[in-house]
Image (cartoon, rainbow, N blue to C red; front, top):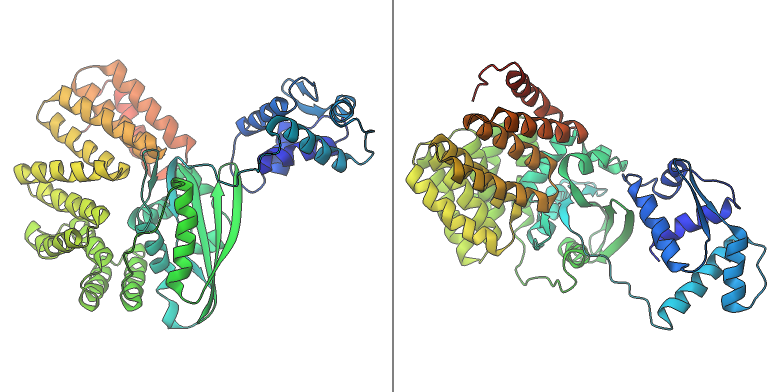
Length: 471
């Protein structure tokens, strides 16, 4: 029995036959996570399956559930031939043990966690260790954990730069994370697993406390190690097993802590809007550790975002791409390839960009990099639409939606719906354009994507008033 299901059983029994509303159960059993009423229904369903043949839970439509003590007593009497216990807590334990033994015999229970599907978000690490020597831990350990995890057919590990975007979109700070206010992260990212870590201890005696938040539960633990890297490895192994039971860490090592400290400062500068300061820090990180692909990748992305020429982007991206191939770092190759193609695309070098996208797509598909596969399909869809190749554009947008759905990403899905709306309008299908725009706005409002709402509402208003919307 899952821990939450057992907690619900205990809550019902302790009510001693009184009605317990769904709201009360959600506040009592799921007070530490963001869920909807469906989890209550699922847990009740699990209990009824366990107590098959006995009517132990009464459902009062639209009001809640009640435990039936007399029926529960009969379960114990029938299966164990013992008198009903007076203690309701003991009754709960007895019932559970009895039924589980009957249903599964004497087999040892498996402690293997449920495999995660959807997005995995690893947040920056909170550090309780004073002194500048460990400032790099905040983003350094986060990136180390992320870089050593692999996406699967059903789940995607969001990379460091995208996690920072998620935090900004959710208006969440490290202080909020420390207070366990992570609900906005779930809302805006579509995450199924959010990892929070706190670093403490002393040299040669480090502790990396971790909390794994899922929509239906929380798991906490600690990794003890003599080095920061070994502690991070232990947590990475735990997370990896949630994605793939056969997960094992690669033998690749870490880059220097000095380089990671510079990256941490660069990410802070970028978060504060100081793009030029961030570029200088990332350049220093690359000089101090030439094999640090994280610094190079972030540098390339920021160059493209700030409108640097392709020639300037090439000077950083091409050597980094060669190093990524030498190190067999497929994730970094995909990201570097994407941003190189974006630089070429923006400069009007469409032939080079399309060829690079094609190569990058093949590599991204081989490692299940759902986010960047979706990004590329969106770009290719917009390009095809601009060339009046509407059927090709439709196929690209449909694929982008499929990839975003793997990640359960509300932002990606709403963006793609808006692309589909504009495509439908270009094809003079106003009804479909309106439907797609309304679907996008429903997601935007439902998942609190505030920065997307004004533009989407303006587009919808233009559609409704039959004015020609701006492209």
